[in-house]
Image (tube, rainbow, N blue to C red):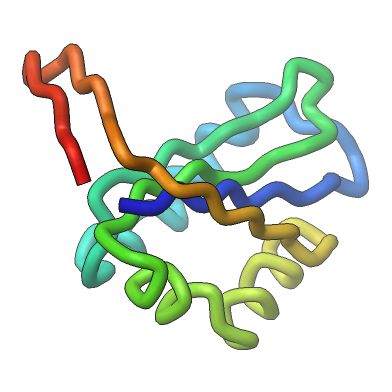
Length: 103
């Protein structure tokens, strides 16, 4: 498994309610994404940085999403280009399902 953290600075701060409405409008596009296990939308406390934390089955699955088209979509939606950092994710503790997932 791999975790990708995508972040972008916003041109102006968002409230949690504003972010929630925007995030809900884009969430359906990720529901059928091959290899995506889970996505968390995130917003900094000051409302100036937003992004997503993605848990993927593989780096190849992640790379299939983070294309020039995706970067253009994010830039158009939020006003700034995203930065993506990849991290190995060998173990996940999932308390909702009471599972420990091992890659």
